[in-house]
Amino acid sequence: MLKLDEMQKKLLEEVADLHAVPEGAYNIRSNGKSIGRSSSAHIHITSKEDGSGIVVQIDPETKKESVHIPVVMTQTGLKEVVYNDFYIGKDADVVIVAGCGIDNCGNQDAQHDGIHRFFVDPGAKVKYVEKHYGSGEGKGKRILNPVTEVFLSENAYMEMEMVQIKGVDDTNRKTVAKLDAGSKLVVRERLMTHDEQNAVSTYDVVMDGAGSSADVVSRSVARDRSFQKFDAKLVGNAECSGHTECDSIIMDEGRILAVPGLEANHVDAALVHEAAIGKIAGEQIIKLMTLGLTESEAEEQIIKGFLN
Image (cartoon, rainbow, N blue to C red):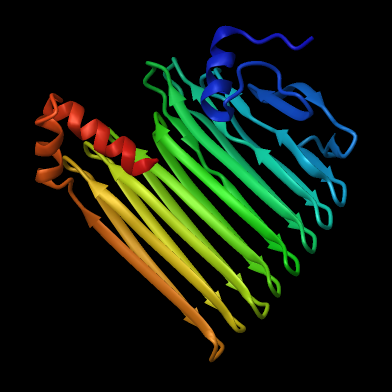
C-alpha cells in the first residue's frame, strides 16, 4: 500500500489533481526514486535498463484510459535528470498526466529536468497535461527544465496542456515536434511568474507531411520583477497550416519578450503568428470595483479569468 505524507499529498494535488492513489496505470516519483507504480491491462510501465527513467507502452486501440506520472520533490539540494519514453499504439485515445511539484524549505537549489519523448502511431490521439508548482520558504531555488519531443505519425493528434502558475523560480521549457501527413499538434500554455522568477518557453515545430497542422498558444502574466520569453518557430515543409500566438499581461516591473519564427519551404505552407502584450485595462478594474471588489481583488479576478 502506497503511503504518502501530507506534503507529498499536497504536491500531487497541485500538479496532478490527485487526492488519492490513482486508478489504472501510474508511476509516482519522489525525491529521486519511484515510490509507487502500477500497470493496467493495456498500459505497461517499465524501468529503463540504465535506471534513468521509465518506458510507457500503450497498446493499439486503447480507449478512455489514462496514465499518471507525477514527480514530487521535498529534498533541498537534490538535482536529477529523468528520461521517459512513451509509445502510443495505433488508433489509441488516451490521457497522460505528468507534472512536477517542488517544496524547497532549505538553502540549496532543488532541480528536476524531465525529458519526455512521445512516439504516436497513426490515428492515435493523446492529451498530455503537464503542471509545474513550487512552494517552500527556503532560500534555495525551485528549478524545472522540461524537454518534450513529439513525433506524430500519419493522422495522429496530440493536445498539450502546459501549466505553471506559482512558485517556480527558474524554468527553461523546450518543445520540439515533427508532424507527418494529416497529423495535428495543439498546445495551450498558461504561465504566471512573480518576484524575480524567470521562464523561457521554446517551441520548434516542423510540419513535414501534407495536411499537417499546428496551433501553439501561450497566455501569460508577468508580475513584480519577473521575466518571460516566448520563442516559437514553425517550419512548413509541405502543404500545411500553422499558428502561434502569445497573449500576455505585464504588471509592476515585469518583462516579456515574444520571438516569432515562421519558415515556409513550400508554396502551400500557411503560417501565422500573433502577439499581444499589455497591461490590465483600467476600465476592467473600475467595472469590477463597482461590484464591490477592491482594486487588488479586481486584478486577481481578471488574471484568473485570463489564465483560465
